[in-house]
Amino acid sequence: MSGGIGHTSWIAVDWGTSNLRVWGMSGDGTVLAEHRSDKGMARLTRETFEPALLDLIGDALPEGGQKVPVMICGMAGARQGWAEAPYLEAPCSPPGPENATRVATRDPRIAVYILPGIKQLHPADVMRGEETQIAGFLSGQPDFDGVLCLPGTHTKWVRISAGEVVSFQTCMTGELFDLVATQSVVAQVLQGAGWDDTAFREAVDDALSKPQMLAARLFNLRARGLLEGQDPATGRARLSGYLIGSELSATRPYWLGANVAVLGAESLSRHYCAALSAQGVTALAFSGEDLVLTGLRAAMEKMSKEFT
Amino acid sequence: MSGGIGHTSWIAVDWGTSNLRVWGMSGDGTVLAEHRSDKGMARLTRETFEPALLDLIGDALPEGGQKVPVMICGMAGARQGWAEAPYLEAPCSPPGPENATRVATRDPRIAVYILPGIKQLHPADVMRGEETQIAGFLSGQPDFDGVLCLPGTHTKWVRISAGEVVSFQTCMTGELFDLVATQSVVAQVLQGAGWDDTAFREAVDDALSKPQMLAARLFNLRARGLLEGQDPATGRARLSGYLIGSELSATRPYWLGANVAVLGAESLSRHYCAALSAQGVTALAFSGEDLVLTGLRAAMEKMSKEFT
Image (cartoon, rainbow over all chains, first blue to last red; front, side):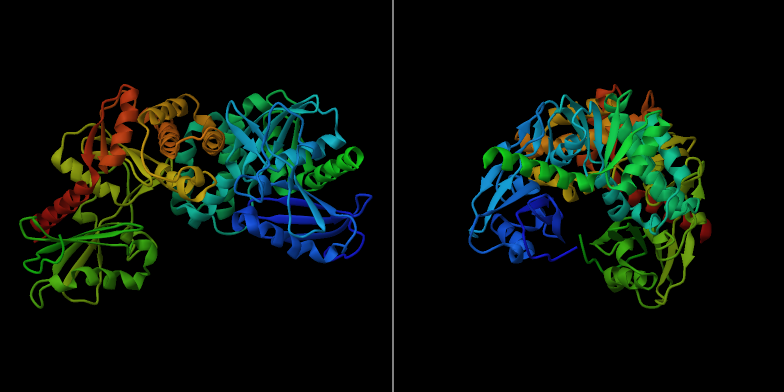
């Protein structure tokens, strides 16, 4: 879906480090238009956020009349983003419009709000964007008590109780996978497509029982490629298994005996659910992409009720 | 030292993935000239090895007369190198000229020999280049019985007994450090110079007691940069400590109660010796750079004695 000039009553924005996603929304919460671009926070300066946004949705904005609210979550609110939206501190409810930072714009047609992330002081940890997925999840499951896993570049494990983010733990699993699979000496033996479920499960088990071997196992992937003709699909599944297994070993206090829900892209959530299942944990999977929009929608509804 | 046209009786070459080092040697083993270039294996095709070598030492070669032997170790002998020098299999003595692969050249003035690396089948592991450092070390310490640690991009831990490489274990520690410190989300909070010994020691301890936390600790470095104003020097020392601590946890069966010698660049060996010392292991440090040349010299001496 793209274009969709018309009755845009508000704009939803998920502004990550690498990607920008924008939805034109009707008053009843229907998606009128959806746009994606690679103008993530990392490619922008403070002055280029507004033009990047207007490039995508400028045509859909009415001239004159009331300002169209723009509800943003993610790295646009980082210190090096459009405007810093200071973190809430856990334990806390996921941020709503009452916590948003209002950003001045040159274009008079929009009223921009950036939702803050959440920080934790001990141990130090931060999230920006995931809190809005969590808000989206909780808007549908307000009584959820347990642990959320949000797999991705920086996987988050989040304890939820009484509608609050109690504590959380980030693991750099996805970023390590990308760095090792594409930029390390191992990359050469992992080229190709495909997947190997058995190799994945064995690697998860290995990492859970010997998590200290990670840096050795990574080089071992190269050696098995050279000496054993290891299939690249097997190598990639092993790499994923070693990293996810290490992560499960690190986050055991989160998932052990807990009620776990995995919020993320289907392809990745599937691997986490399989790994948890082997540990006797039945995790439910929810699409993370939908949940960002649900969270932004919940924030907008709250603002409409309380602030107008 | 550079240039040095004259009585070059043989050429020593350390040809790594990223770097090329060449020494012009006299008949008594004195270094007449030393050259470095960034024409490592990764930047060359099979056909461009010989020109890359001649660029550096062509001028020093006598016209006519006997061929000048060129003794090479490292990645030039890999499958994707100049010519594949098939691995020896551990347990074995470090390779000598009797194991070298003779490579045909266009230039009639040189006789090229590439020393092989060593492979291990269970668990799969490989080395190319380190075996020649080990040969150099053993030429000075023929009765050494214990464990060698060769820190670097791919750190090797090697059991030595009766002059043989008994078994070894590679950890991708140095490459992970470079990837995380320069290309990950953590890089931003590590910019600058300096070092923090206390932070390093604490991170080593932490990783030794909780090695499963590695991917979590890496992201924690970013959070501490954002929330605690962590000094970049402290961040870098912590990153190094987490990675080296994890490695020590993985290689405990190698160093625990063993006679350990660290062969490597002084700046890096110092950190390994400090980390081992905190575990009650007194490791001796030897310069790895000198040892490559010593190993190549030992191979050349053996060839002169046995093959001429």
